[in-house]
Length: 346
Image 1: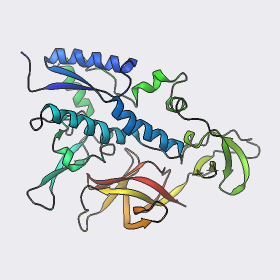
Image 2: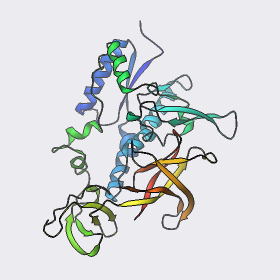
Image 3: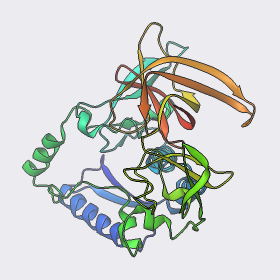
Image 4: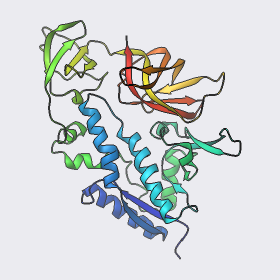
């Protein structure tokens, strides 16, 4: 007997001929056959390339550190896929995904207009609310996260108990097509196939007038990470970290301590206004400890000609990279997010 009210949908977001796509599609077919449900393979290669991949390359080329997973959720998984499903059935469907996140309801200005927001799941170790932070409330009414109240170990146990063909399949790690596309493996070598090397000078933060080395491209370095620059240890002993980038001069600035900041500037979008007298917390990386927010200031950026938001933290933080997302939480609920354009280094 076929379960007509459940359909398995597989998204093809990269080349249809890539090995990982075919392996995953074969797994989907085995699972759908076992569950006796319909399966569909939908192609969003163009959407992914134009809305996620090309903007990611542009950001890296400008020295930023983008987050393609956040963009993919916004543009593809909860963008192109939902639009496809609405064409299939305009009203009678629910998109169920395996994200570890939850949903909470709230009323907008119109009390009859009940919307939903992303919140943290029970399994904090697998929390994906950060990556879902840009998905809008009006989209979430058509979404369900069935793993929100389960731990990863429980999901594995349920899958094994039901004898699912993919019960022991390893967790996905990053972009499946990176390993097979790159001769040397790894994300940096993968990017090197699309971004040209643009060598430039390296300075120390203490002496910006003296060149101490050469980098092969600002995109190959991330603020806060260990600086992989050939330098004579006799003159520059110890560990060195990427302190900042000067895209105008194509220069990399390094330091013997990780850069710290207590404020960031963002292009911020609120899903709903924060409640009065409720403490707000921020994350600028997934799975990091939440950072208490001291103040929030809106202003106009003369350079970028747009409205910006300045977030000041109660404590100094390290390794904040422009291009990443700042996500704001009210208790365990995501109420807004924005791309970090600048960190006030100290």
